[in-house]
Length: 322
Image 1 (cartoon, rainbow, N blue to C red):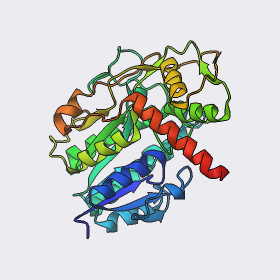
Image 2: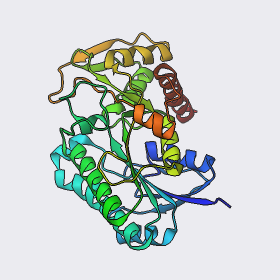
Image 3: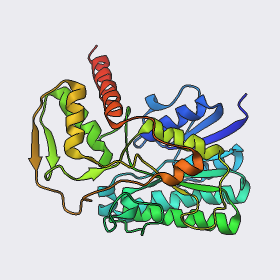
Image 4: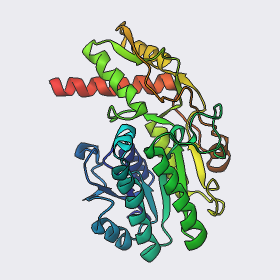
């Protein structure tokens, strides 16, 4: 029997399922909480316990109160930036109030649970300071999605300072990899993979020189497991327990497309569309803090990660056709 118990909210999703896999491999007893609004049953590891439910519900709070979890990796969220702009109240209900529902359950009944919150890097820091962004850079989110993530980080600092709850915020770059859905900024990888398999042109908005810090999902999952067991400094201030999870490398959309074309052995053309208003020009994360504190660094290069991701999409396509 596993010595440690972990709850993964959003564990049927793209990133959450990788986190669940890696926790299981590390010997944790894993419970997944997911409402399957965007997560998929086929992503759920067979060795995990699955509870279908919404993080804003009393049932979710009861699960946290009674579960005896050593760690909660909190990935359940409304992740669509455009949806957050169209309906900020909906975004806040899930991303802020849903998190508070779980945090209050921990405060009341399980204060020894370490909370690892999946936050955001590029959407948190904005476009005012040149990359790579350090954890202490100014926070200037452009959309309600990033504002909600920042608000939750402030709440986590509050729970650490006032209620002595053990909290960690992992600020992800643009996560990509197998099981990815074509949503969010990193969703371009999934979109491009599907277009290459269809033999359709790759659409690049603007001139394609805009950059992002693309980080492989397996590396993100490894960061969660390290954060679950690490000895960390006190969680009294906003940035004290925050860690950037990225590569520190800026990859342009043009370079991303070219790498996927090589992985696919394809000369599918690239078409340019008008630039999207408000899009960040450059984004990359300084990861020196997480390297020094958790001993984490990305194991997968961008070319290797993209090749593995394309191979997964190709295998899934072949399996569906069989």
